[in-house]
Amino acid sequence: MTHGSLPGGVASPDLTRIEAWDYSLPEELIARYPAERRDESRLLVAPKGAESGFRHLSFRDLSQLTTPGDLLVVNESRVLPLRLLGRKPTGAPAEVLLLRPLTDDWVRWEALVRPGSKLKPGRSVEVVPGEMEVDIEESLPHGSRVVALRSPLPPRSALERYGKLPLPPYLGREEEEMDRERYQTVYARDPGSAAAPTAGLHFTTDLLDELQRGGVGVAPVTLHVGPGTFRPVEVEEVSRHQMHSEWWSIPEATAAAINQTRRKGGRIWAVGTTVVRTLESAALQVDGGGALVLMAGSGETRLFIQPGFQFQVVDALVTNFHLPRSTLLMLVAAFAGYPTLMAGYDEAVRMAYRFYSYGDAMVIPPTPFNNPVE
Image (spheres, rainbow, N blue to C red):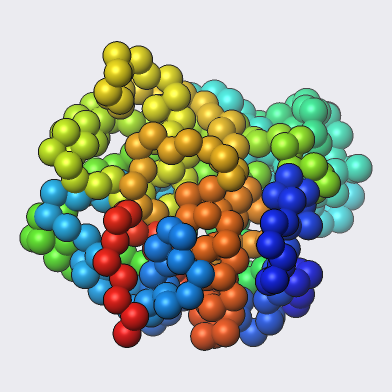
């Protein structure tokens, strides 16, 4: 599987063009199953500005990089089994991928349907005869639909019983029993995501306990991940890409912990790009009167972070390895620097790291950072 070439040797690639965001990846480096133990995955340490001398750790060694007084911010959104497989009245197979609820009772949803040309408003998909049906009610811009769930069970119960996890297509397989546990973080609490916030999949409760015993705080936010986050950018001029809207929430206690950490000189560690987008979306809406004060709250974000973005809250980033031409890749480049990102990916390929949702991890630690070459 190849996605073009690493732009090695290119002094100043045009980051506004999609070609700058290609890289080559051998197909065997795509992780189709998780590591046997979550924190056994590998961790590439890539300080900002570095293009060589990266450190190679195990994820369980993350505490070597943190300092007492730091704060780890995690996304506690929980993945729902939002993929519904069924049949049209003709008997032909059909698929509905629920994106986000449109009503508080979870009956009406925005969804993607397949085959889109056949599933027009007024038609339906039978998921389980007599137990669950999806009615197509309305067509929306960009190809999505408004659908309604019909079942004797409450919608949440019907989804848990009859739905499937929307695993990424590059896994090349259907859901297996272990995915119900391993495609969730150990701290997942708030149901609503169509895809896992994958940087958090590496944490175990033991590792979180160890970090907290070492003086590192842990605070939750929520961003319900939509599938649009992981889709490749399909326009030649990157700035023309339209982000899908995603819902976020920052509790009062988390906002207070972030503000206190910053006042005391601690560093804010974002676990995943979803946490970065949550915190930086909130930061854009505050009036701190000089010093930044993060406010609790919730809202919808379409924030597209790419090189040139000025980060206001996040000091360090834990992340997975992302697909070429993705907005996630661009976000990491904005934080680490494009040369660091591409050199890090080159190193990860050379060292046979495992890529994507079930793969290994990368960390961009706070600066200044002592990074001895081992």
